[in-house]
Image (cartoon, rainbow, N blue to C red):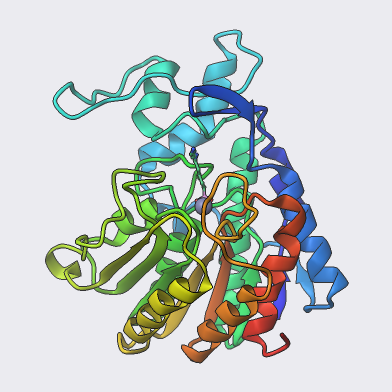
Length: 343
Ligand code: OKP
Ligand code: ZN
């Protein structure tokens, strides 16, 4: 399997995030992508290709122009106030108290962000655009006949919606790629999100549509971020009714119960008539993940890849989360080798 990768991911290098009332060093760090690319090379998974530039058009197919413009100029607006540290929001709109777009960068950060864990710095936009280009470069290879390609995206994307960012995500790489498949002639695309956290951005983006089936396995939002979305009764609305499915799972979930939900997810995907499959590949379901509470083990990731291969569709793997950094390379490549029946 070939991998698409861009060194520009390093430009996203935040200092701290707000978790449980404290500023802590960011979990979503450049070392994550480095350890994965090192493992791809060490295992000779396949050729590593650079990203091509697709410009803004494929991004604007699923994201609001206001969000994209904000992400492009946010650092400059922040720095213009004299601040030399990462930009984070500290105030948010809530239902019933208005949501007007302020002239102030502080108001605008809160308008577009869903959390205070997603720092913006001088290189953020360049890294974010590179991450989307990695996804689009890999998508094109799958659309033109490759069985499967790995897009080593960083920063991740599944918490970014049409007009919001957060959860370490700025643009929804999986959503952008799914839309690109449709724009190149696919009639339906399935997105399977196996990150530990619910892909709220992906759900929001396609909730009213039947041309993208979105299925997510994740920690129950009663217990975990993103808290407000990801419940089992969210099934899509209007034309999208029946084209979204959530599998919220409790803390402590191990492969035995995880694989039961995966089996149901796989069956739904196999019967939906998709022409392509996009995997939001998060490895934060690992038993040693520092911010998560599932119990998957190294070897379980081979089985995960194997089950994805059975779905028997042209497959685009998009990197999402995973914060047990030293194990991230092994776990990620285990999925890809399981897919190729090398595990
Ligand atoms: C991004 B991805 C919980 C803090 C949660 C945000 C987590 C974002 C995860 N104590 N902070 O889905 O891996
Ligand atoms: Zn996650």
